[in-house]
Image (cartoon, rainbow, N blue to C red; front, top):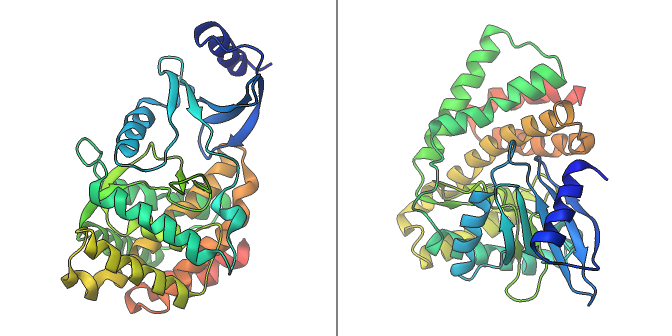
Amino acid sequence: MPKREHALTQWLTEQIGLRDFRIEPASDDASFRRYFRLTLADGETRIAMDAPPEQEDCVPFLHIAAQLGAVGLHVPMIHAADPAQGFILLEDLGTVHYLDRMNEATADRLYGDALAALAVLQSVGPREGLPPYDAQLLRREMALFPDWLLGRHLELSLDAAEQALLRECFDLLVESALEQPRVCVHRDYHSRNLLLSESPSPGILDFQDAVLGPVTYDLVSLLKDCYIAWPMVRVQAWALGYFQLAVQSGVLQPSHEARFLRWFDLMGVQRHLKASGIFARLNHRDGKPGYLADIPRTLGYIVEVAGRYPELAGLGELIERRVLPRL
């Protein structure tokens, strides 16, 4: 048994007092966290999180879980925690992710639930104490695209004109993000982190990196998902439906309508540059190649948006000409 798993089992038995349970891997994470499902003697299940303290701080998870639960969002209840060791015993929200059930027939209902939960997160979710989603963080995220996808994965070198093009695009995307109203941002609000669960649904996972940031970030994470894509007409209809919900919730003002879809589209470009770089980094740094298959879809969103915004045309052309053919 690996050292961390042995320590986790010891904690569960000696500190928590569990007996006669079965432990098995529950899921991997795009980080150093690991999750195990415990089946207890009476058939009840729990989830044990292993977050190695030298690589992951689980205190934000505990703090934000309490705040989100307090406003009625369905996040895992905490049964026990030992932040010093990096162990948390959680409620098991189940095994059925949104991605498992998303299809033409279910999408409107599932997204309806997820958008309703997002309105709660943005209107009454935590704000005090959240790190700011500032220009420095936005730029650091986008730098993953040239550093990890272009440089490390594809071994592409950009000439001076292409480097200047990226800088100009990054400036545009940061400006658009920072002019938006600020809300609690989950940062990974998508089909692999939302679970079909008992009411209220969805069950929400992976919220520990929440920040105070742009209102469209989580919306674009959900509707322009790196793991499943929908026709743009349908995506825009869902986005505009959420705009009305956000106005009703006091998150947005009617006067924001003229800029809303532009905010949404440009926020998506920022996120998809970041995500494509992360997928490459997961392969090369962390030995997780499974995400490479999601890069073409992720970059496809950027190409689509660039075709509708002249100021992004150069970025779209760069991706179509030099990146996509090599993936």
